[in-house]
Image (cartoon, rainbow, N blue to C red; front, side, top):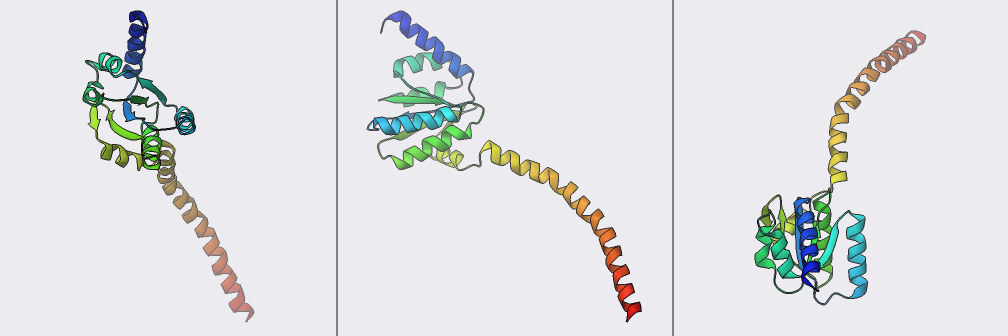
Length: 172
């Protein structure tokens, strides 16, 4: 790889770094082709950019950015996952594969400039997804209206039941 190719890769990584809220790095040694293919497919489906990078190029691209904290973890084979809109999705997928495959090992992550340990990434992976949180929020916002409609419908229903009881008592 010549100098201009390396500069292009550093510029591309710097662009990815500036456009992401979260990134996670992992050691991918010992993972077979089938496992990598499944991992990449899941990550792409979740809108995550996953790539294998040279440590020196990642160090250069992250220098002076919110991902500069990851420099100390750039040793050995390194793969980086840049989060898309949902920062929990890559954590969920990577933590699942780290638990499933012994040789796949999470190193660290950064979320909004804060360094995340492996334990933090695992905790983040246990959070509900963005869609689940939105569904719960909508359900909570819908509850008062549903309860109000139920209460308003109960008034005529109760009136009909009272009138039915009066009619039965007069008939008897």
